[in-house]
Image 1 (cartoon, rainbow, N blue to C red):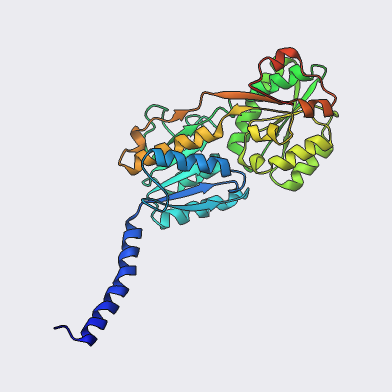
Image 2: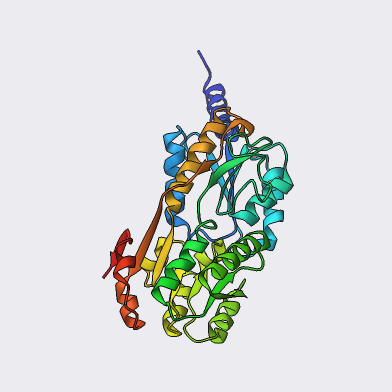
Length: 327
């Protein structure tokens, strides 16, 4: 018969062993390093979609995969250190949001798979060799936020046909995206007979200055595709309203929050696809062979209430093309 002291000792050893076993099991769980230039508040809807994509691929956070989040909250200069930290922690795969985060991750590792979500052309900025055969350790999903900039300008020109000057707002701390958007919209402006003024904002204070110095008054404004501007969505809506500036942004939340117009792809679908891609890599597929997914659906949303407040009449031709009209 087992003695009482031996039994107690055995129980104590088992009790101590359980946490160790649990920790061992947890450490064996694959870890997704999630690196983003913005904040989790602004991307809450996209995070839900990312987790849905993971679930479709067979992975649920806390059950068979862990996620380590790193949010730069607009301070893009912190991204290289954050990327290096995820590499040191041996993340199984690194998921990135935006061009600065993706470039930081790509510079930090050539071996850990990277799944990006970006507004830019991944081939043009050197992330992948081609969309169908990315090569290397990087693949992901791209939306149409940069490519649709000229169309956004066209919509504004149709709404304010008397304007001779249009404004593009870009983030100078994201030069890759800023240069691409400036180039594309300069060409579009010339075609429309407009002069394009490019203004820069990388901080909240910069945003205030931009709206104070817009010239001429009521010059239509295209808000560039940038994670910082998504973070500052409510501030941008308030400033555009206060200074009576006709604006268009690429995220639907801009129009639904009171902005005049939004035109862009569905970011939730972009992040859902990124979740699916991540799951496929966790199952053993190689990013070099996993084609970059391209978002193809875009939607135009017009806020009629805001248009009336600005004293603008939306042309029927523009209303007829809207996917959603907010009364």
